[in-house]
Image 1 (cartoon, rainbow, N blue to C red):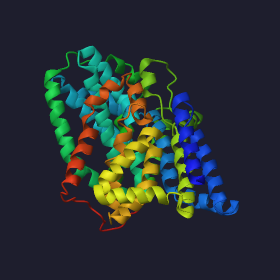
Image 2: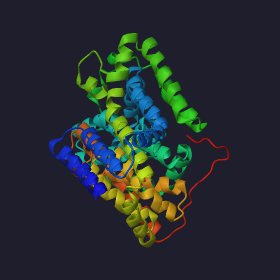
Image 3: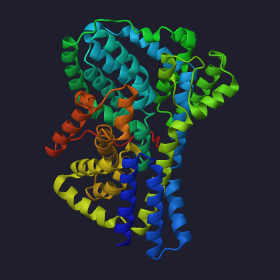
Image 4: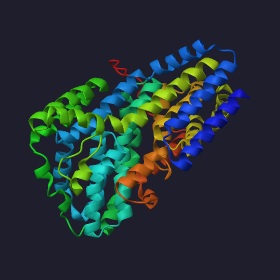
Length: 449
């Protein structure tokens, strides 16, 4: 009964945060307090509960450090001119006759380099929407292509929050996971591309000029050298260097470029690292290029840290055994993927946050996958093909609402966001039909994160 009451308190606090729009960290803190009380009522000393929490926190150290570096890099890639350079020059490759395809492919590229749907939508996505408005292209269709492209990197990039989080909790190598995701997602990507080709032919771009970019050379020095942080990322990823080292090298490189090429002061760059990049010259372009920084990661870091203390308490006290047993029984009838998909849908519906949904889906479903003898790499793929995508499709979820707000569109754009729907649908068909899964499970050389 104490566990039921604790969960009711937690759920009530989550619902309240949705209704009154206060930080999700507050219900997480309330939930933690409730679970601590429940653990003590079960006969555990306060010291023992603290040790449980510490064990859970210890398991999250790796992903917290990576998230920390991701927050820094999102600001420094802006101040160094890396992101502005990519945006400015990539627009030149747009072909009016296949505009929607170009939007999708450019957003795929950009999201792979940044690992973020929101970062993609808030930068090159905004530029694509400006082009669509001036060129008479359907705005909902364009927004759907932007979001689909964002999903590509949010799922497949070694710098994605969700990809690193899943790699950490499942104790899998992120590069193996990425290779599995590329193999598994190839068919949905090709179908998505085909659909956008058809829509492109029906919606050609009539105006090819992006006036919003005209001030870019005044704000940034667009020398090719500013691409170095991104190039290093691609090269080091190809060499399968650990993500934390790859990010650290890119951070140091972009820091130096901010000082030397863009002539930012040392104090300014330090400020950007915390609060995000903000150009001195106020303009529409300045708004597009602003963002990033550690402050943008505070909520995500808080969710990971608090959720990790939950996992420590749950593992040591067995609070979730009842729920886990129900999920295990369902997994025997429906299969591991379908069970994970259904569970993650309900979790995402009330958590409204991709990070929290991912943490809770793992906590509730990993034993069901173990009971079905699902390999940890297959389980990681199941989570990437369920909770990560679902959280981005729910209009009330931050993972969906924030990118839509960035491009100033409503949830009507979701119906044109084909890639996540196709990944879920095709995987569901494959799993239900019990088609063989070609999942890579090991590396010749272990490079576990």
